Length: 210
Image (tube, rainbow, N blue to C red; front, side, top):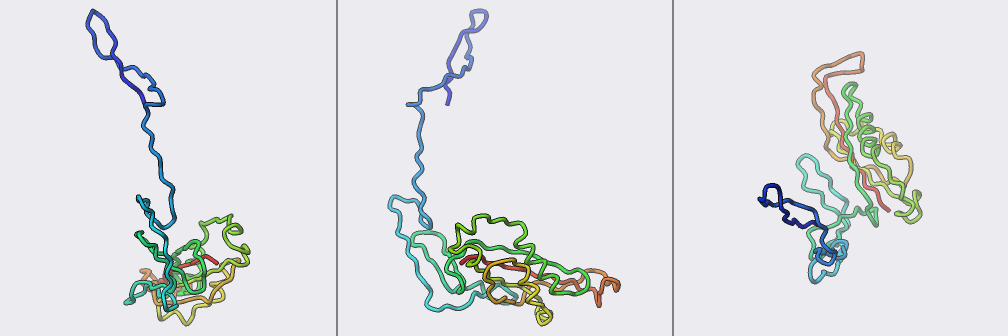
């Protein structure tokens, strides 16, 4: 912080000439940030965090055409805060959630689109601290994978090939819901294996925790 002082100039006329003069530290305003409490607002009285578990442990319902919003099984409600945390049945603690998009423009191969969606979800992430975050490290890390797949192509999905994308962790059974998209690519190319002009899109949702 600086102060402005006046000084004389040429021809007997005076005008203000800004000069930088450091103020003594004692005159500088100080702001102290209160400690941050996870899940709580910083108020005069910090509310106590309260964890509640839903009575029923139903599976997460993912968004799909005509469905309701996702309804998790385990819910952490923080009293006095603006948010809640949701945990799938298979996990005690969620660390992070990844999402990905995969498309097969030619050949109508739904597995190829699903594999691409899963790779897209994880390929831009590097989490070197898994051993510190997860008790037991990579061996105890759990993955919950949900795919949004067009309904008419779900039967031909190779689930083992999809889950092989993930190199480690305890892989929970793959969940497939109606979603994604089957739309026209604008052209059918027989040399690329097309039987029609359909392009397939799959959406991946990956929950990582323990």
